[in-house]
Length: 326
Image (tube, rainbow, N blue to C red; front, side, top):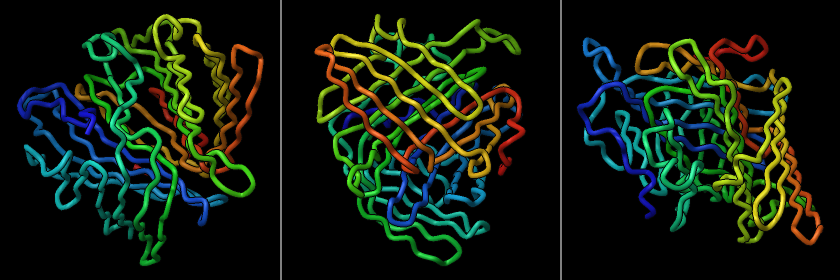
């Protein structure tokens, strides 16, 4: 395994949060899923650390459904992370939220290498308030999700598994992923895009003037690392409502990606920082994505995904257009 899933919490320190999440989309049913295994160690030592299990299901033309449950932290955990009987392991995740009628049992093949969204020493340092890596960037999920007793079998569902940790969430952020590009009625293998852009908090209530977008794509094994130094300094990011457009360049070409979601189909959740401050995150696992790759020769490749892309928008105030689920 590539080690990017290893917990960063030492079991004792405070002022720390950590999350492992899976996002996947199923072409056969048109549904998307988002599962999170988290822990939080509040700064206030009068509050005990907690572990949480989150689960959400998305369907075209329908409101998203989902929620979470909170457990005491069991440390060290079984596997990568444990929330009660729900366990995340390398290549295997099980969990259930009985009150929501939602459960899952998923498997995938983790790759040998991980993607570090902020590469090099900067990404591994304590400078970013949140650090992020994808141990499984471009994988296919198999297994089953159950909703109210209905079994949804999964075979080759595109998605990813990511790990993040830090001291606090950003003032604003966007995240997008897609490895479910479609052609001739099937999912194209070997094409993936992953992006994150965040405006950090410099102090409580005071955001930095701007953030930096980190954009990465692969086509048939060829990387377009617009997130590497110094190329990420030349990248651009623009948000309009629930549409996010990024542009980046690297030594072998240029990348343009557009993510877009329907607010009525999204889920909004509230995150709590270790200091007690709140952030709101609006998420979709059935979003659209358009990817354009221009190589140095001038050749352009275009890929599209309808309903198999993942995107989220985070802020310090609620999104009035997206239902808050928890």
